[in-house]
Length: 295
Ligand SMILES: O=P(O)(O)OC[C@H]1O[C@H](O)[C@H](O)[C@@H](O)[C@@H]1O
Image (cartoon, rainbow, N blue to C red; front, side):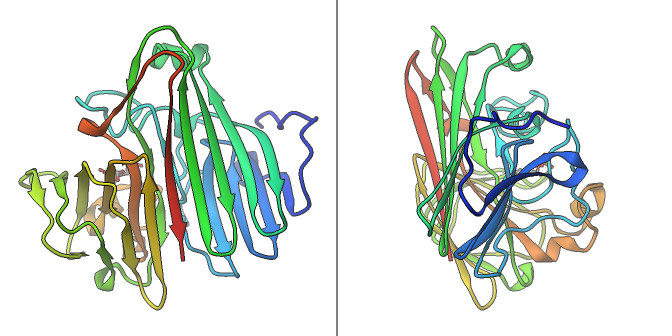
């Protein structure tokens, strides 16, 4: 089992740390406004359930074990996305989603709960990415908003460039009748294998009729997921990229940690800075990317 958070951290009422699935440590929130769960493994939000209705999607086949990313919720992609700007980097989406994070703060005002997680460079991270950094990740959950504030500081003495994504999976009634609005007019790359990569310009709301994997660039536009009776809005700050993803039939079947029929019930709308939107930080500089998820 991973290390418990430092014992001098006082947790407010409604917040506790438990041995979750696979024995991994999970921070559970249970307050009148919402319930939620964040695994220290990957700094991974796996649940946000305001007023008893789950907003995020988590695969029934998700694997909870060291070294493996959890399928669903909000994986953190850092310090690169996919195989990195030029491809070829491993592990896919960087090491943050498979590394243990520390819980360094937890507060509540009775309505909101804010959890503060931290990740800093170690011998293990420097072997994969030779930079000194500190990430402060604030997860604020309440009755109608989940705010995710991801702050990276360059604690070294040379500049570095990184990619980042809050790879949020949302539950939808049926992807075939789901629409994502708000990104009209934005430029995107079509990352589905074999497709014309583009860049393309989006000319209307996104509807889903097959595998979809679009990387929107140079846009901070807010996306609205119309997914049944209730919509979810993903607003962003400090984020110029957004990824919209559904694997559809064949890719879902090819993933061991994704139920064959589960592609109908999810969509990813990700808050990111990737490819040409990668961020460069000078020594001592800081960058914050925020996702505001509201219902
Ligand atoms: O299977 P993973 O490494 O978690 O990646 C899952 C997906 O993440 C992003 O949305 C990418 O755009 C997709 O190409 C990728 O398939």
